[in-house]
Image (cartoon, rainbow, N blue to C red; front, side, top):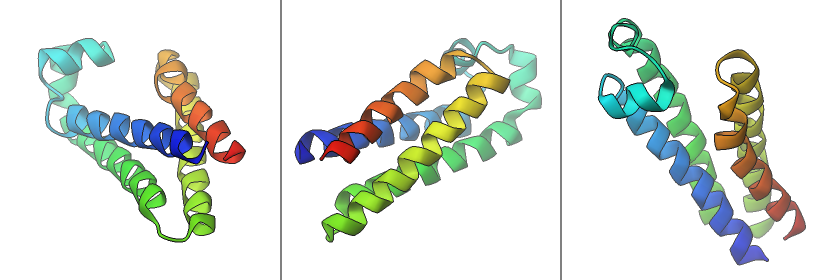
Length: 120
């Protein structure tokens, strides 16, 4: 179960690296416009804000990677739990205030990983 939980945490981390790339570097591209359901005009006007959001997603990913790689398994589990809970809270907030699909796209994988880490 430990291997499965680590893989699930890694998947959540990789998802947040992808979000970082979308928000920091690809915000005004057709892929990001479609992904986030925004217009070119809005993307241009909000580019700095999106880059800031992307940076925060990068911090979440870094914390998750750190938790998976930490040598002490007890501390590693605590780190993973903390960052998964951060992702889950962010997904709930984003789902309620920005776009409901965030609950499924970010929240569900984080919840599944959280349950796996607790069960490991």
